[in-house]
Image: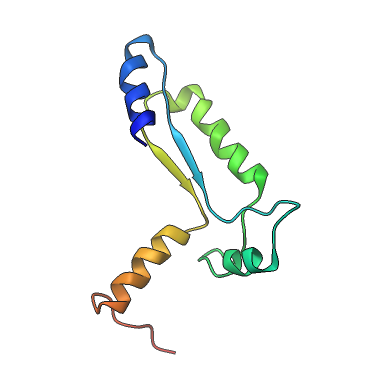
Length: 99
């Protein structure tokens, strides 16, 4: 992210934006069963697709996104927030869900 933010600052004056995309579990031809299981455990219950990541990148290239720069767009089906949420649950900040 350091390079992304540095480029964003260096080129902002020229109207050029720079962002990063951080994909989660994405189905490809080489996806293993373990990776599919990991994707199934995210809040959306599935792995993402290459098209979903591509559309996220396309969104960042839109004129309507011209004020977004120096950011990291996480495309992971909620996995990263689940991990944060799970950590809080393990340390007792959030009570466990009742069945």
